[in-house]
Image 1: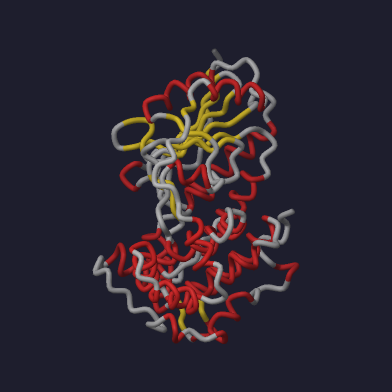
Image 2 (image 1 turned 180 degrees about the horizontal axis):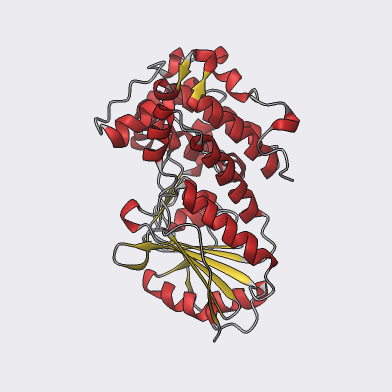
Length: 373
């Protein structure tokens, strides 16, 4: 079997060609494979090269865990870097999001099958490098979420696009609460395709590398031998999700939840009260706008949104004073779990605070993602 090493730009991204399969392993297990700018650039370079390489017929990607080659797909972007870069005025913060969103678009539009082994933590940026996959494989250990409102951000990396296409108003529920899904729930909401037992992943990975041809039909046949039926554990209460998260505003949603005495409603309301009130309003508007957008337009919208998150000029909050940097500080820097949100209450967020987030800082032709189709 041909074994061709590919030189990448990051020590945290390994790549090689086995047979007709390009294999990528994220190798930053101590950080749960959180994406750095170098990792984004390495992934983009590898995938761009393999897109044109006739020897590569399909791509598989996994995240190395602390105890083996699987175990933690990707916990998201490197938010410690975001915090430091925002305080320092480091221009690489802007580069990170532009290049990450380009990578997300590349994966969604990739002309060859791209198969993501989504074991362990799959959150934020990990969703961005897996939701565009032709096959999204989960395990009983998968913990999937878009928890950005917890750090004063919004569900980016195309989150507006893929969450808004979940059934009913589950996209709003996931975007606002950051609720964690298991494998069954992810499949039920259309965010995953097949379940493998955790111990079957290596066998499926190796079997892919043995394929003489890796078209979609051959890949489906190969993976079907390893897939197991979802267990339908912890079925989602879709009627409650739609009843509450289909309401017009965040204030309406939380008011209705708090007026309901069921455990589910009370827990959901408590989660919302912990999130950034400002970014809850932004995220709800994002999901609802994205429902009628294509991926490229959604990513352009999100690139504008993220600029405003770190440079919220209309509120006079820049760099270290921004909602996002404060959220990161409370969660992972000082770890006091006491973010000083501004405004502090969901009910105090005004439309005039939210609307400017959706104004592009750039003319259309000068937008960093103007070329995306």
